[in-house]
Amino acid sequence: MNISTNILDSIKKESEFKSLVSSVNEKNAQKAPMIVSGLCEGARSAFLAALVEELESKKPALIIVHDEKSCARLAESLRVYGINPATYLPRDFVLQNAVASHDFEHERLDTLIGLISNEYDVVIATADAALQYTMPREILKDRIRTIRSSDEYDPDEICQYLTSC
Image (cartoon, rainbow, N blue to C red):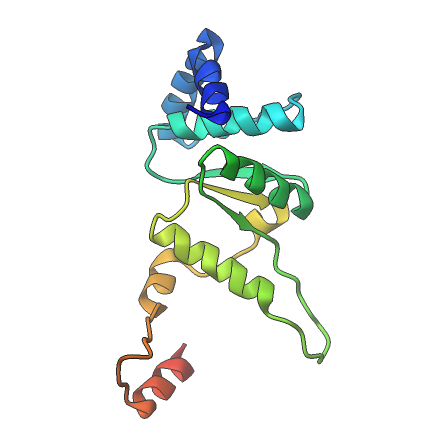
């Protein structure tokens, strides 16, 4: 048994924590939010990891943090406890006619696709990222195509598919 498991087990044994988990699982059915504040960074990570493990919902939890740096830090901390997190960062709008990197767009899409396939235990986002519009789940699901180098494809069909999106 490693130290991170011991920490989580200690948290889960507390009666206050059990009461909170029960309340969250009841509210989860109602999709009610929960606010956690006042914990130092290390305690917050351990508390959230324990909470995510105890959630009855099969859907990933959504954690809102105040900035992108906090997203990255919390994701790294949760990995220590065996939680599989995804970060969802805000989209940067480029209103000039300039060439811009699409790395964040790819990361956002990877997170959304991972949510569809239930790859993550938790998604960590900033408030502005969580509030930005994106395509509906079913449309994204219909537009996902896997292309393997070992398979053969008709180039005209691929071009038609890509231009139809």
